[in-house]
Image (tube, rainbow, N blue to C red; front, top):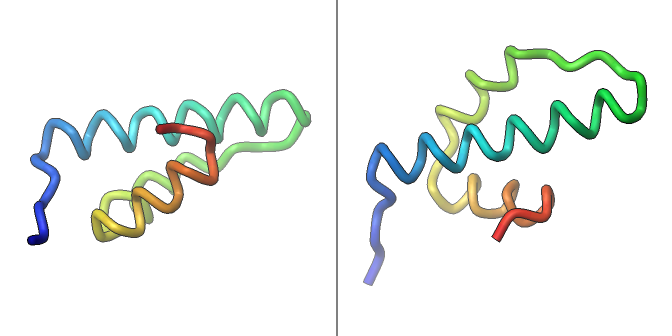
Length: 58
């Protein structure tokens, strides 16, 4: 059975992903494009979970 993330959970996950990506960019002295937010909000729940795993978020 497929379950869908509610908006609050999805929003928190997106915020955590952006925080991880921004801190990684700053540590490497590279620019961070805030436009990534728009890519993340249009991702499916499954895609967001994959990205969160890549960022080390469980």
